Length: 355
Length: 156
Image 1 (cartoon, each protein chain N blue to C red):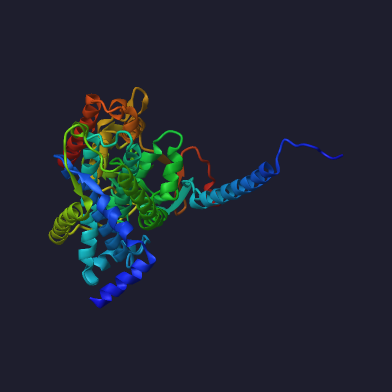
Image 2 (cartoon, rainbow over the protein chains, first blue to last red):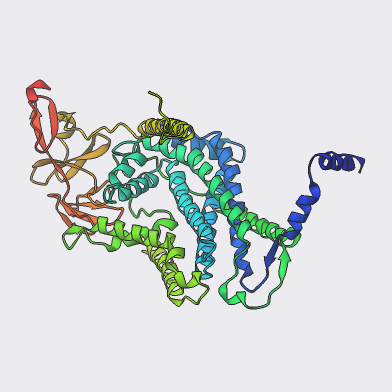
């Protein structure tokens, strides 16, 4: 007890503790029937923290070189103490993070949380979604197995189909004209250094903005009477409880379904039969399959890539197109557009999964 | 002659000087950083030289792969014994293709593209036929040459 009092004294002599306490007590979260969606962001945050920890552990042993990459992962899962578990946790943490991130984004889209004044929260969130997908791609490329090799060729080649800047992006990502060892070191640098730094910056910004504006209210709840719950401790404890459940799910998945490691990549071997990308690329994969080789005399894949780029760009800029929501009016058109995006994503993913 | 007034104050002058210096410094640094990060581009080879004895005796209606730079090249012997060399990369999204001897077709597993044994795109998303190369046999060498490139086999 004396220790605690002494420690408290030490702090209080130097910092204005009461100011922190008042600040913490003043943070309120509106309670209403859609409040459950507020927790999806917290889950993603928790999973990201887990990814940083398990990723840092794996980076101690992984070797980003064509000769050793595949072998070093096999060593991690077979020879190191609980190595299989940490790799499996990192894998399932990533899967779940991306899944919950999609839920988080679609809930923000349908509740129109992006409307004025929260446009920049939406933009930073969309950037984080894009980065997470790039995290996923660069992460499974580090396996250096057959599927990863083909997937990265397709993804970087697809970027190369963009007019004007495509060739530049493709060469930059590949580190040359082909997917080689140069690509592996590049993706390693992206995965363990560049993307994490950008992610931390964006998360800090995202959270700061959420705190600055306060939690967004759905339009239908704005005129209704609703209570407010203090963040500390009520919501914070709820967050912790949910995180515990999520941890349980990730650990269960990691233990029961450790991810496979395919055959080592061989640039001269044909693409394996029935090859499929990760589930969060399936909607793109399925979209690409829809387009024929040539359309009206143009290259079909170029048209597909341009259309997809416009779709993504529109999604990104939705807060600026949806003027009605920004004025606080009902905006059924954008509810429809949001639903269309969601249904397209879900349906194409399912078709991709079963075809 | 003494100048009594100037359009530029001392502050504007110094701000422009320092601002210009900062701009030059950061754009120079950024330029060299981008130049460093952007790879020096190698190009695809004009030709590769292989041992003829490794490739010529393969069974009819089969292929054997070789390295065409960082990509895969395929050496094809048709049923009638005619030999061809082609780039084994799908023209759609650059996946490596495989030869299906029973159907005498090339197949790309990534997006289900098909080519006949002349490299023509016949089914699925591929927009263009496969790229074929010229073959020169000189002494023990099998030289695979990009179409349109002239080389002198005696010099190899």
